[in-house]
Image (cartoon, rainbow, N blue to C red; front, top):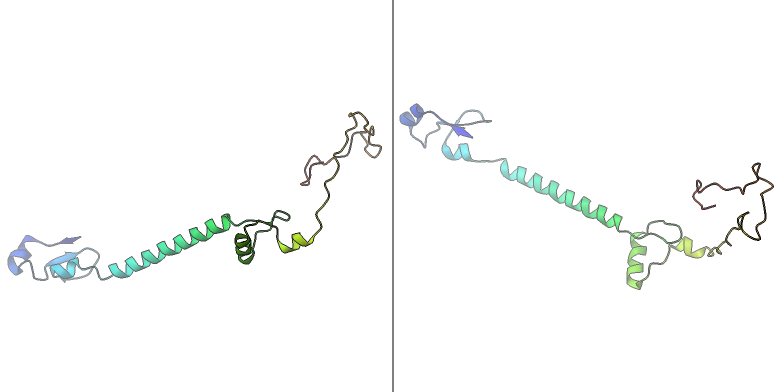
Length: 139
């Protein structure tokens, strides 16, 4: 924002240093008062900040879409991800692939089901011992 007085304009003319720009010291000519020498630097800083935010958002989106091993849930490395994309597969990671595949456990028979083993003698209540899924497995 720039300002002047009518008396200064009458005495010195509009092209003289009679203009005051708020936020700066002294009197200025119209072009100097309207010039924005810091504008290019500020614009460059703003553009760099926008580019950095865009890169960070792209990195976060990429990490969010990163596949994980079907066996151990570990996220794939960049090399493994590229290898799987080239091969068109989504196999597990090397340590998980080297482990033997666990056999599925037979279903548990409940005490009330026909052919059940009856009450669990190790349990003080006589009911089967279970964790209720608290420890990450359905028992």
